[in-house]
Image (tube, rainbow over all chains, first blue to last red; front, side, top):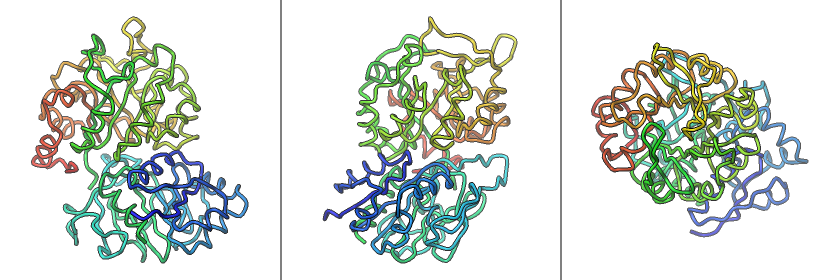
Length: 210
Length: 256
């Protein structure tokens, strides 16, 4: 694979090492930084994140110029887990305004039955709403509307983004929510592609090919 | 559909995987990285590494293998054993573990659970509970179970303790049923069911798997989110692909 100038934004989250290692397994080096100049200069940018939305926004704001930098990026950007949620407009988790790159709200799962434990933790299938999207090439069998045949990914989260016009992968837990989103140069996965076996690795590889 | 998780547990002592019966008489089962790789390839949903000596010896798990495991695994894994401070946990998460599991230190100081949840989010925080059905039928929590000379009964009733752990920010409970551990007669369905009803966070069953039907029973009857086992997987007695096919045949969703 051609080396990209990949930057992982140092958002202070705990899953950064696993994201770095996942790219290493693909033969891709990554630079971890919160420096807007270095992020602007990258060919591809990952916004990782675990934890709470309000804390994450506080950390991003603490770095001079970082939020404006992320909002202004034109190269491929991918948010992972909380990093994906940050792309939206607003989160109920701490009632905080997010980056606003994609219209939409992030809200807590509602418990629909006694068996529905929260956090949503484990492997769930994602129906590829736009199987022809470049990010989803060869990610799994398609799929169509048959959830039994769609690929599985590893999720760990208590908040989720509503379905919206830019949802390209749909997951169901209680109700439908956005598992994969893409709008222009910006994309995101609610699950952890770095911990989702071959299907997850394929999404990261597709991202690098953008 | 969210699938039920099959979780091999690797008890680590001095850098190798060991297994004992009812927490005792440990024998060597194999190399950490080799077993981790094997389970990744067989389709395990997640791995748990317990440093079984760490808590009682008052030392943190060796960092060295955590990073190596994180580099080769593309499935999530949890590290347990001797994590006594937020800094201990941070080191392990920064080395690439997805979750940390705390047991005796949380019993000593329950606020530790909240500190971990505040620092890393509830999704990283697993509380392991070693529990025993006493002669009078009550459920009691034990601590320092890694070393039989130090094992003692904690003051908590099991159901009270899992509720408190959830309230303080645990994202998941692993319930190790000590009466059943290593004897391969099945999971403690009654106890797991009682715990399932007491909490709304994910619950993982541990202790007693000896046959594929035990997994079916615990998912169907106790409604747990995952089932953990060690020797039946290490020995090859239950191949994970066979187990998952069997579960799917019995209408229990498993990732294949």
